[in-house]
Figure 1 (cartoon, rainbow, N blue to C red):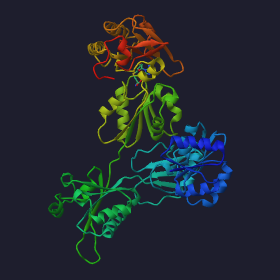
Figure 2 (cartoon, helix red, strand yellow):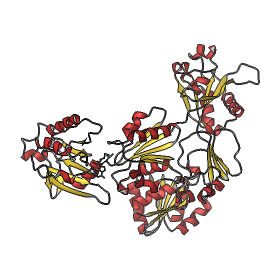
Figure 3 (cartoon, helix red, strand yellow):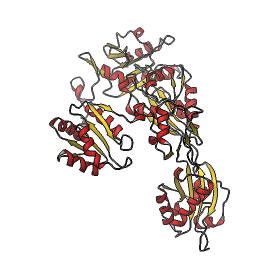
Length: 571
Ligand code: SAH
């Protein structure tokens, strides 16, 4: 919940805009500023104060507790010009909130937390537990001093600027080592602890066994991602409590699935009890990986038989492939999600001209693998191979990356050993549609006229089907120097079913600096004015030129005057 506090009429007006925009996220505190700040500080995760920063600093001072628990506080000035992240920039989310509030109110977000200001990921924002010399290493990163990144475990991290022999190090490790004097340890969630227990095994026995096993194997408890066991033990209180105390989820698998996992130490007892020759080892390895510690049993002080078993595996690195559409060109048609994914990646793969479009957004240290036109398959293979190595990869394409672009060759190449995230982009047909008016108001298709990968007969058959079905058509890849007869032929097929006066929109470089567009007709379009930077949208038999805009009516009602009217019951 975000507490909103204001003292003046101008502040109250801005406050009300925020409250109206986020009714479920905000609560207005009406009392005097002092009382309101105290109440909101106690009750909310975040505060937005429409007050002078000085006043807010004085009010907050006696309330400050701990960076990890204090709310994030954003101040908006009287003129509504700035949204200042005042307190809890990272932990309290105030930096992000300042950006959001700024976006909503048209105010400039002001963020001073060092790593955010220069575009580096704060070490404390990578989402992993960390320990060691965070302040010193962050400072070294900011000062541009060499910092070496030593990844003992491949994991999809955002880019960190790193050099091979720095005085400071960031070490990604799940081993129980102590950080050096100028070192930060990042703990990836790489370990899976498989556990088994007989009915009624005490939580202390399970937990003690897990802790002892990790200690003996030299592994950090902070890298434990989950406890795993067989379905039949999903409610076993000792196991459930051990997972809760470790602060990790408990994952369970059917006995049949565990029985198929090859393990070094199968035994008869669990087979008889739950139907698999291994619980601890098989559950630790159920999703693949490497067994670091084979099964061991608990030791009971009273000499009675052990009630718990455990084994530890390192799960395989799961890289991350984001397939990101950059939109048609203009920066403000690049979605915030696309920006976030570009900054989330440590490897960027794409066509050089698209890389140029977003290079300024990449974090320092991002490895850029760019290539020229063509080489599509190779780009796709490269992106997938980098993700398989455990990296966070962004594969970019213009418009939407799934439309005549990189997503399909990449996903054809990928198997289920990597995570894939798609970020939609504004495709050329939509960008052009918005410029032309409303040409896509009813059913529409996109057809690529490139016969490089598709035989012309197939393209022609689809154009004919669209012509017969009276569907609005947008042609991508309409014409290039070597391919100039396809567009006239496709238009001739449409002209066989549509009036020569049918509106046709031609948009070149939509949303780019040299954007141009024309509204013409099927009878008058000169194909020579069309090139590869262009899309051509041909209306259906109901599409009209209204005040210079291309408009395809939404349905039957518009057409009542020219047609027999809507079918019975249609609206
Ligand atoms: N993935 C892209 C399409 C790639 S195919 C998208 O979703 O938009 C390349 C074709 O897209 C070009 O030949 C052209 O027809 C069209 N195109 C891409 N960007 C364009 C733009 N900004 N303006 C007009 N046409 C564009």
